[in-house]
Length: 484
Ligand code: ADP
Image 1 (cartoon, protein in one colour):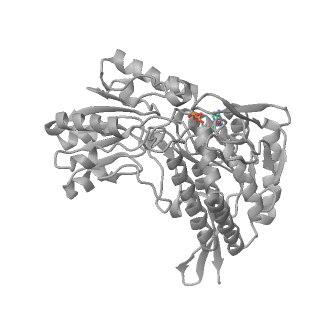
Image 2: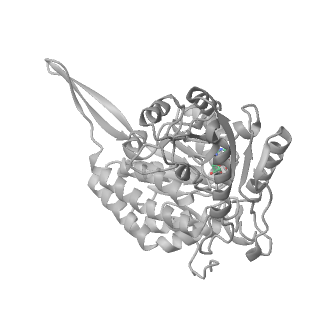
Image 3: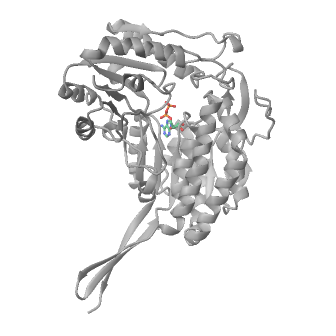
């Protein structure tokens, strides 16, 4: 294929099982669409229930020997994979930009992180130890950290390569085998990456990559009786379904789902810092509700609008300086527009944006919308409660800290949250009182692979990354010893 930036490469389109490329047993395919101009990029094989079963069998067979490969050797393979990711950085970023529509700079940052993630977990592979615990004088116990087994991993379209790396890294470090299902909207980079997994030297069946539809391939994986764990990132609705399906054999689960992350702006903050709304919104931790103290409310919204106007350069994701590309699919684009309608009909004030954007470089084609800001938003409005997953933010004012925290906690979600204030005592108090898996003080959306990532309430179960990632992919076996 030739990508819009002129990069030529060979795009694999099959199912990657046992280190081989195979076709879908039903002959079904999924078409990958370029969201920038709505053109077809490639047709890829779609896994059926039967294909998932074949992949799970391959992973089960591979697990028998992979679990006994030493941590040092597993680490070497992860280092090699990190090195190959680095060598193929530009092409991986190109494919993600083409398939997903995210700006090329953002895609490059994603790939830079995956290089680190594989290196980080490569370093951990030989450090997943148990513990000795003394109990009484003639008894003690020790723990053994064992891999969980065959892990199904179901990932979304917003960070195709990054979500794959967050899940593959710790799973492989702990000695599990994997069947990974990419999002059907953005499978291309991960399929390309499969060849690198093989080149790095991972034995057949250790990593299987089976693209397919959620309702078919995803559901087959979540309900498979021989899958020991499901790790999922995606919408809360799908997570609920997955949890039900995973119940058939009480699978271990890690779920990272939606958010409606608040940003609390107190009147003693650095306003310039607080108005920097970073991101185009197709991010689960994206700031989507802003609460501003009434004493600086008017000043804040004017400065914020100015910032959105100047920073949000919408356009071709390959063009330099683009801040926001298209929404990933037509469905997602229509979803954002429907929330714009909802906000208007619920009586909130449309303060900025709120319409489709005709992109000149693709002759008006593509799924572009202007960043949208609503003010005067109440708790009972859908646009306050529901995740939009687009360049869409709602703003309201508050008087006291208690009121701010109460409104911040007033959704079913609890993923990210941020507080801007120079009063550090208040910052830490808010951090304790807020219902969220992550809190940023005087910044937003920082993520680092060394730090646990995940949500509370309906934003998820369990944690990814850091040492928490190793906990999520290993069991502790307790061995009791009686010395008589
Ligand atoms: P979105 O609506 O943003 O696409 P989803 O949660 O539906 O988010 O998708 C995230 C991942 O979950 C994708 O890989 C998708 O194919 C998968 N998926 C969707 N529906 C199901 C399902 N019923 N069972 C298992 N996986 C699913």
